[in-house]
Length: 225
Image 1: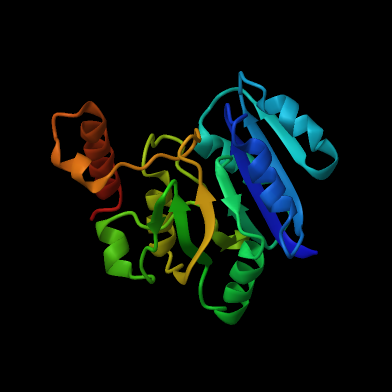
Image 2 (image 1 turned 180 degrees about the vertical axis):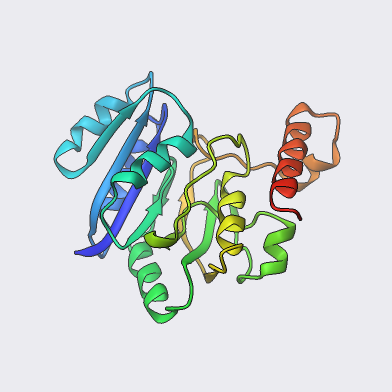
């Protein structure tokens, strides 16, 4: 049994939750614990979680957002390593094994991340680069971390919480390593993850883009970029 804690924030994820849970339970290495944090769901997510109650630790909380849910799950995690999996993700069976081996092979790094698929689009990302990370968010939330280096998500942020997390770790000289392989996929009907095509950002009149620009400014000011 691997010393990995899996934390899943769950909010109205009835369409994708079961596939997510099955993909975690079918890993080639068994995590020490799976912690599902039900963030005030109003659909059938709770019923689905209860079907797996003997294999999960379930936390119920009033709706507070994914960052708070992840932090609350991390507070009770017992393992040396921790990974946050969104409820709209499906993991390849070898994902945790490959990530753990990468951390064991690279004792100088704090976390390992990989390529992934969102809908029909592949995101191959880049190898870890400090300067690139300061310029743009490119590391997904679902990295396997050494729990001792996890600083917590900033619950005050509405967007770019993952970018903020990795920048905070970088400021403490905690870096990552990249696995150039697609190890999980994200449903384009999920509730936790959203991606906009690049051309959308050329349309500044869109309200959503304006909010992302505002959020980006907050991150840059916070980290003095």
